Image 1: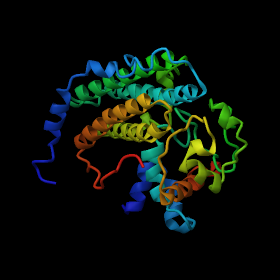
Image 2 (image 1 turned 180 degrees about the vertical axis):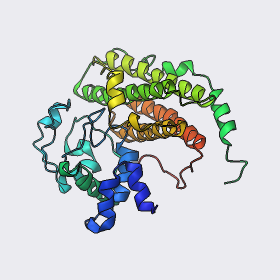
Image 3 (image 1 turned 30 degrees about the horizontal axis):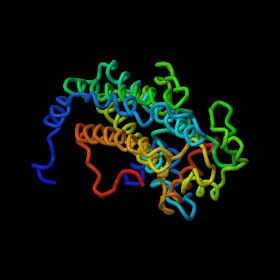
Length: 132
Length: 195
């Protein structure tokens, strides 16, 4: 198994990553590495499919922040009027509290721009509802 | 890494299994007088929200170890270690609940056992062996390590930041022991946790 495939298996997104490895990755990020980062750094609270300590990420890109009815978001995020795009995800991952003060996701786990690019690349592929 | 610095699986599990749960762990937060009587200010309210996210992680870890212990797949001494780690997560849970209540917040409740069993995150239906149980526990512990480290800068109360560091240390111990028990490699790079 190639290292990139192993990373995808680890992140639980083998089918999605298979497409990325085959050449559908976009410039600016490594989705396979992003998947491993997602599992290690985001996986404590988040998954693609289920709400848990944090909200699920299925259908994330293009969705308004704090709008998933099944999850108990902070009032600050519900009121933020942010729509999740590559740009807003980059701002959020760099420092969630700087973008939306008093939100519940206060962690800072992607200070490195390369880490954020890889995470966003992964999220842009793995959270597409049509791919599930 | 030489043999002298790399524990064998059996010796590591035995050593870990001999650890006893520190009474101090249970008093991590509950006995912290600097937190007692604090009012739920705006900053404190956000701290409560963060603590409730942490509590959700602890509920999930307790459930995951319970699922592992009841699976019939864990053999001694791995089973003993799993029970020990679960007891430490219960200590974290109790401390977090006490602190949230002291700050005037409402602790989040655990989901039902059935909800945890069916969750896509835990993927319980794919567990077939002791190794699968260990892999699930290792994944959850790593997520908890990073969550606690990542949240440290956000706490308005420095005492809470210190406690997050202590919780991260417990989770790192769990992750390391599980990784060794699986025979998996430890991280090569320095500063491999958090970001």
